Amino acid sequence: MSVKGRVGVGGGEMGSRNAVVSRNLALLLCFGSFSAGILFTNRIWTEPERTNLESKNCNQKLKVENHTSINSLGQISNTQYDIRALDSKISNIEMKLAAAKAEQQSLLSGDTASGNSKRKYFMVIGINTAFSSRKRRDSVRTTWMPQGEARKKLEKEKGIVIRFVIGHSSTAGGILDKAIEAEEMVHGDFLRLEHVEGYLELSAKTKTYFSTAVGLWDADFYIKVDDDVHVNLATLGTILAGHRKKHRVYVGCMKSGPVLSKRGVKYYEPEYWKFGEAGNKYFRHATGQLYAISKDLATYISENQHILHKYVNEDVSLGSWFIGLDVEHVDDKRICCGTPPDCEWKAQLGSVCAASFDWKCSGICRSVERMVEVHRTCGEDVNALEHASF
Image (cartoon, rainbow, N blue to C red; front, side, top):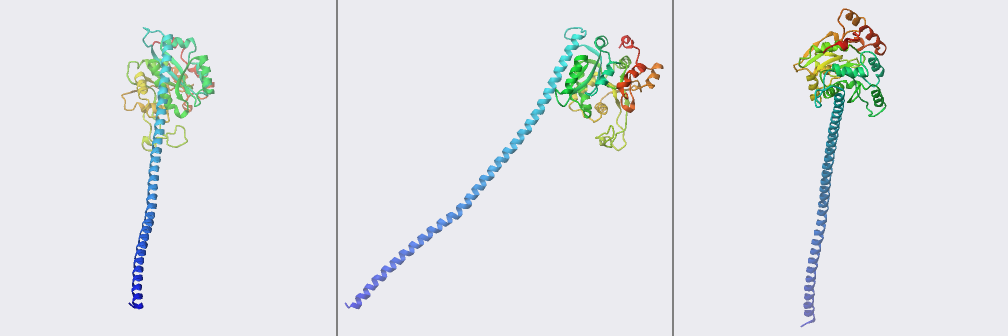
């Protein structure tokens, strides 16, 4: 074989080897590229999945927090409701304790048919007063309201109970309450209510007074009178005795004044729109200086006090509570006489007034200075109450 032929043969072998190497290298490159692609693809898809997972976790956390927040608000609301309910229960318990204490005192001081029976009274007179009215109270004590043993005798023999009616100050146990407690120690003529005093709270005070009084004393009539009004007890008792056998009696000086819708004026009615067009008048109701209601009406107020609406003017409130009931309105002008000379002339004519005051002042003007004068000129005979039979 020639040299040329061998070379050719050798060259062929080399070519074959190169072809094998190139094929292996291509496979290796393909495999490497495939692996790199898988790695790159996995990395691209892993990040969004992680982001989505974190987003879902955040959303779930927010939902849990929101749910927890809602539950917390609900718990706070329930707690506030429970506190209000507890306050109401405490007030009711305190009122019942006060009623039990007063009843025990009444049983000890009065005659009873048996040891377990409740004393029967003719009328309970609540004199509405305020912390600042010490001088007014003293003017009443020195004129038409019996004191000490005379007042106890009046309760025992005539069944007439008289008390100054007052609640508590907004600062429980403060100087105002302590002053009343000191006055009570001297005179013993207060009825303390579970009520916070305030001029705009007179309707609430009226409800509480009747509810408390009917629980303390079993009487035929319950009366509210202001501490700047002069009262002749025998004449008032005679008027009420004439209605003793009636049911649901509402006695007073009946009126139907205008509904005042202008803000800032005296006796402004914030709920004027409930009474119809401008210029309308209220329904008939007793003027607030003095009025009396029978026991069944006082009991009605006591049993429904939580749902009876309160208008800003307490005499309007009382009249509204009886709308829709079968109530007899007794309009007696002897309960709203003027001060001298009006009540003096009427007394001279034989028509003694049960109550006297000045309309322009909604009570006796300058009552502290003038109560003695009104009592001297318009008061009934000193023996009238002793000789009266109810």
